[in-house]
Image (cartoon, rainbow, N blue to C red; front, side):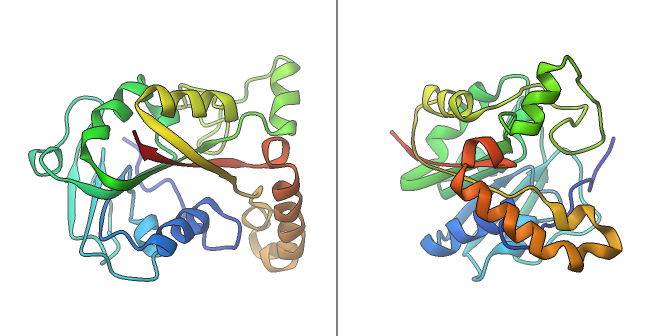
Length: 223
């Protein structure tokens, strides 16, 4: 089984930074990170929460020290007893829902774990990105190891469909932000030189979020 496929994206406008900013602004003390990998959400925090729990299908080679708890778990089957009996101020699913057979069912199962006033935060690829839309319209469906055309993706979310998925599961969407196309990450040794181009892409994505946003970062309250 593949693991540790995702790299921490520390640059401004990345999904990790955006999720980190959402959490840092509220400073929830009990956080559940589903599909935590090596702990990229923990790395994006600027404080040390009382309890940061991570779940993933495979044990990572290393886990960020902010995590208090980790367990191997298939969230489509069952949650660990310690998690199922707990309440959380924030539940995060970063790049997870598109891999699940029944994402709405998983979100419904998580709803009782969200404390009063808590936040659900999810991120998914934006398949309405103009370039992706034209590729799909032309009849192509590339298969790659990661990115929007990850071969393990089971769902193609656009702003409307991810909003419907979250709200049908019993939450109220309060905001959608978008990340920038990670141009700097594509540059390899030229990443620094490409960073101004990345910042320009981020500025454009904020102006035309649903057409130029790379990922959709959805915030929601429990209803």
